[in-house]
Image 1 (cartoon, rainbow over the protein chains, first blue to last red):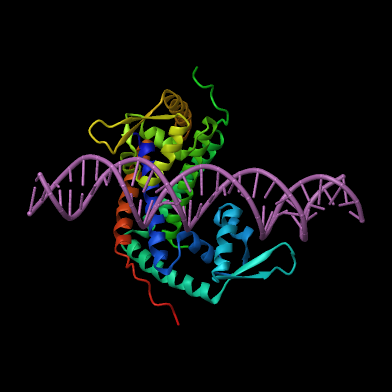
Image 2 (image 1 turned 90 degrees about the vertical axis):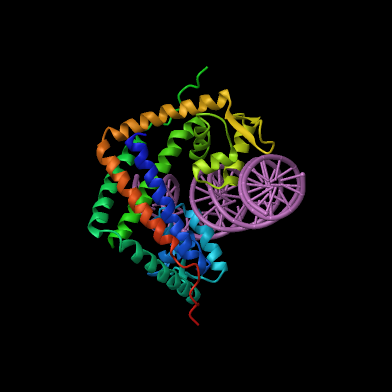
Length: 153
Length: 153
DNA sequence: TAGATATTGACAGCATACTGTCAATATGGA
DNA sequence: TCCATATTGACAGTATGCTGTCAATATCTA
């Protein structure tokens, strides 16, 4: 197998493990990675759905749907934005704050265990390298033609 | 931000770009990453849905659903497994082979561009390092307690 | 200031992945 | 051989993500 394929597979594998860890951390609190991301995004203050989506790098409507569920469940409350009649600001309810704290406790426990076995300097260097590769991938993918080749007759 | 968080975010970012590249490669051929994975899994011979799912590391029923769609679209055909009356073997139809070849052309084009800007030895070393980290993450996540802490009263 | 353009949230629909359950069938051990 | 267990595919339901469209509202520009 070529080095690039091996690299890509290692990325997929570790991404899967990180997602799985996110689920394992949040599931006992009755949440999921996706819900955690939204609660966490509101951890430092109110935001609109559109702002949240931009911060998370997700589609606006994906966040909208989940936020509506969290509102219905009482983990979030909403508040009008004084200077924009379209916009609704979301913020953590006391229940939402409690849930986020509980998840944070578990996340801390997990990441301390993981990082105790890794060298922070090496991790930081690795992250920088990965970001360089990400830039190259993004550039070359942009240049991929969007036309389909003619199907073989 | 701590090094571990920075590392995790770089993994999420590059994973997202790789997934996006997969979609960009397969979309003009009328497919998606997920469909490509199934077609590719059958590229070297017939397999059952359950085998495919194990190979891909996905849930059996996820693969089942997509495979049924690909069968309905004529990209796959099925064949009974002679020694097991439960099992249906899937294989690429001629149309499925043509689609897979077309995707492969585009994948080659893309990966050649990307790898032309990267050092294969460095990539291979990186992949090895990532696999080591993956092992640590898997171990420490397994040891995470599954009990929820008591909610604060 | 008026008209063009962008943003926001609501609503609807699709794609992909997961889980649980069931009947049919294989398989392995007593 | 016979029974417990595992595997396989069908069916049903859920979670998360995406896209497209619309009306209301902001914002920018001529």
